Length: 448
Image (cartoon, helix red, strand yellow):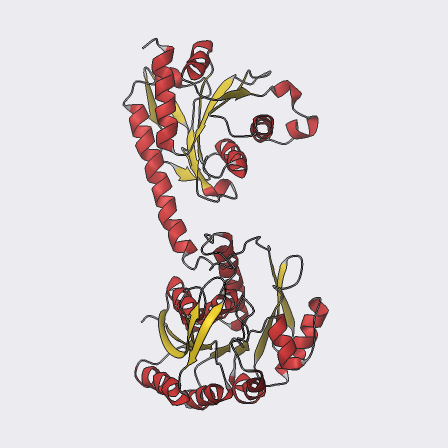
């Protein structure tokens, strides 16, 4: 049976925070999401333009309606705008005390607009926080709740201890507003656990608190323990920040479905490589294959490592006049191809595909004759420390060419070294485009 979770929060018309972010997060985790709307906001990436708070009895009715029928394995609260709504939510949830509650004490929007009346903080502390299995304040919210201002992990631990005295079973103090790595502190009155992740440089941070708390709730709904749910939520949010697409003129949303989109993109990359290989195989293009054989690869958008780059295991080989693939493309199949693609993408994220082909004066001349941008590096100039690192020459050489040219050329070649065959590399946006270039070069080199 599918796990079920309920979010009790405000509606964000921009879709980046509030119940919209919560429901997306639930769905991304395979959890069926339900909602009880507390407030309707006119909101975008720039700020909050208007707020309409629902009557407390309407909020309570929504909660009882879904929990009395469908039930839930976890409940998460977000924007509860005033003391009356907080009290109504707390009273409604007391009838369902066996359902784990995650309290995100939302007070401000990312833009700085107030989402909780100041006089309601005491009601939040007295009525709702004691019901929580987990409470997830950021540093500003934690200061409002405890009066403690933190500038480091020790300060976050002090906040966690103070908050735990208010009744929740677990406290997660979020350190996203500090400098350095993104650090969160989990406390259960027995021990502290520190969760650290890379800080992602992005303006797409709208709804991060909602997303994190909802991911914890989703983990609890699926049967995870609190520490496991927090760790998983941290990793999920980091990925959602890393893959966020810029939207709007202010703080845009995170990418809630980045993992789903990533899986779909992986299939697309493999399909594109297979299609390009089939075309090369049917074109009698064996003259393109060097002695070490060739390979064709493509990286995912935003690729970070060799595992994000697909190529052909066993390479593309020459069989008489033809090119043949030994096996279907796979991710992580070629570190050499990955180094070139990752280096090119650091300069131009669109240049995600590469193929190495045989060096020959006629082939190189054809590249120039077609008006392609052509540049080279000299293996003899590679620094000794780079040569000592296995496979680093291609990364060094590609980076050097890009630095000298100021852009990613269509063609990067080198004349080889002792035990190293001269090589031409075709770099483009897609395997189809790489294949177009390679076949056009071959035709021109043959005088056609």
